[in-house]
Length: 345
Image (cartoon, rainbow, N blue to C red; front, side, top):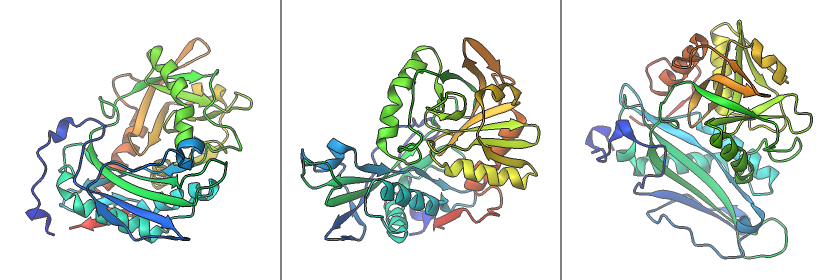
């Protein structure tokens, strides 16, 4: 269907929250008898559950997050969805869920967006359509073990910026008395348990007036792991640095920004980063799908504040990285890396 014939939903696009907003359809696939079904649309927002479904008792579930944009020239695109499909497969493999084929993931995505085109925010509003794919273990059982059946759901909702102020610096608190994940556990996989494990730390950080928390490695408390919901990046001279750790989620946004940084002539280093090094950085940021980049102007660690530039304005390198990535996503800059998947023209 031509986009010119699509009448947009009546929403205050420039003031959308980052929250659930009902759309017309979601997509579902079922795993039974050793195979995944084809994606099918439904308008039902609920999932029928048995009280003994394994996802409820043993946490056998995985999810993803990606965005859809309307570009400057009127196309509807998604950003690197194949990477999300691969990361979901990686998570599923680790928690013994049958892998969802990448072609089914992408078919579900296109079907979902086409069915909800009127909810894709117009170009220039600062909003996007957020896509949430998830897989849950189903089939009543009580003993510990992988489920026999699975449900894959993908839904969409239009969202505004993750943080109310948008691309604006915030302060962060280093947590020394909380761990989000273990080195050989599930920290590197996108499962709900990781986020449940971070709720107490986030509540503590928020109670102290810090909207974002930074975790250290759970073994020695010497190295930076990641922020509560985002990867850590640091800028030092012409270097783009990000932690190498077995307990952090491989961020597609971080990977994309590192490629852009290399293209800008920067040296990219992925290595263990001591928390003591943080004072040497000129800029730091939290990066992920929801917020893209959140600049950090102050980090509180061991009773002291370490500052990074102006609290009212992001640093020049992180600003440049953010602008380059978002302008590719919205079609304002050339997609030189082939990252955009065009859903509708």
